[in-house]
Length: 125
Image (cartoon, rainbow, N blue to C red):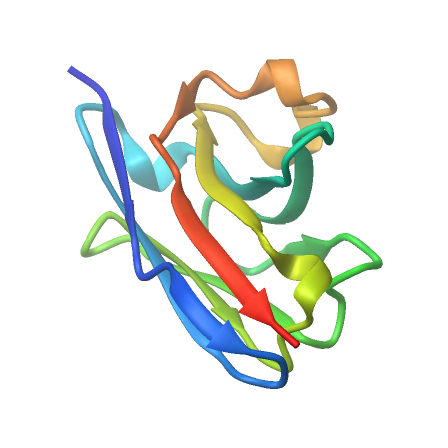
């Protein structure tokens, strides 16, 4: 049974930091493209960052580039998102997602096979 479990969300003031974690089980984590998505109320779910199977390649949305860092520990089957300089517009439910494929072949949100339940991030001004 595939499971993705996020943790680390919470409430912070603008300018603060949070570190999200996502622990995976039930599939070959080390061979999977991993990503973080977020969804704010009334908005579409958007991809925030993704990381290649080996961790050597990353990509970010323009809205978080330079502030967020995605990383992974394949020995621990865990994905991370370090979020710095948080802004109120970063407030959303954050989800980790996985697909047992190379990121180069993953083009759409629908391509991701597995999803976590989400962790809430709230940034106050």
